[in-house]
Amino acid sequence: MRPVLPTLLLLAACSTPETARTAASPPPTPEWEAENPVRPLPAAPLGVAAELSDLTSPRITPEKVRLGRWLFYDPRLSRDGTISCASCHEPSAGFSERDPVSTGVGGQKGNRKAPPVLNAAFPIYPVWFWDGRAASLVEQAKGPMENPVEMGMTHAGIESAVRAIPGYRRYFAEAFGDERIDVDRVAEAIAAYEATRMSGNSAYDRWDAGDPKALDEKQKLGFQIFFGKAACNQCHLGPNLTDSRFHNLGVGFRQPPPGADPASGFADPGRVKVTGQAADTGAFKTPTLRDVSRRPPYMHDGSVATLREAVLLYDRGGVPNPWLSPDVKPLHLSAEQVDALVAFLEALDGEGFQDVAPRSFPR
Picture 1 (tube, rainbow, N blue to C red):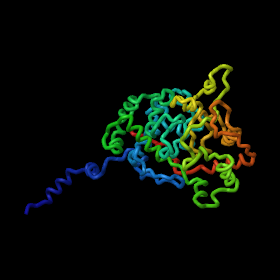
Picture 2: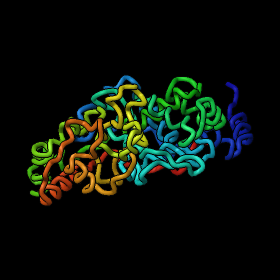
Picture 3: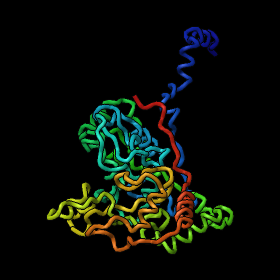
Picture 4: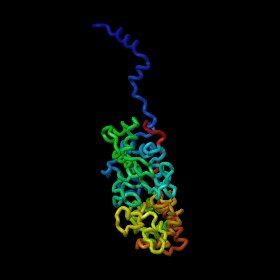
């Protein structure tokens, strides 16, 4: 039998500690990946009646959500590298914002406040944006990218910007099966992350589920007013506390000069720009009331400073105009009832959606 010891000694002599370590260890994990690993899909919190695994358009996977989280917070998707989706959909503001209207590239001001994306994957009707111009969560994700006042890009520009970042390629392959990068995949990944921003387990949800101590007496009175005298649930209904429909409250209406077109009283005409139907003049989508206390000011134009003032606007019956919703009528609430209704609305603040921006991004 041939001796093997000299051969083993020769191999050992040719191997340095560094080459042995290289052969035995995988390459180091990039910092951006270590900080944003693939995580299981979150379970729906109490009060949310559906699960992410039920969705088919878009289909939600952990890999797609991880990619979408980077893209949602990455300002390199904007024309000047300063604006991301999260610039206007702030986690701490319930994924809405605290400014009356959004600020985009170059400091430009829009004419609307960013609506929240909480529980946005589970609408009653498939319409997104204040005017309902998007028919899917993916389509909604595309809109701000090409808006010249918001992110200021074209879809081709988005594709070029993301393709120019080599570090993203592997994560597109993990999420979609290959490294192809296009705007549809970018939007689908962002929508997948947005779908995970689910709010529930609020004090109201716990009380509704049978915990008698979850609401205090003032909040319980507010509940009675919300579902009774004020009939807020005509429009704020279901698990998301929105009917996903469009209503004219008169917000933003200014009486035009005599002889002028009454519609000119609205600086922002709302839903009518999408449908062309005169009845939709000044109508805007009912927003969710989930985490409503976290995101003042209120309404599509941020013109109502506080939650109490919003309740008082409804109490007055809105702002008179030719297209005022017939469901908006004076409520004649007492001061005590207004306070109780505000307290109940504050009890709709939940959990499950909270997040912070990634500390680093693929390079």
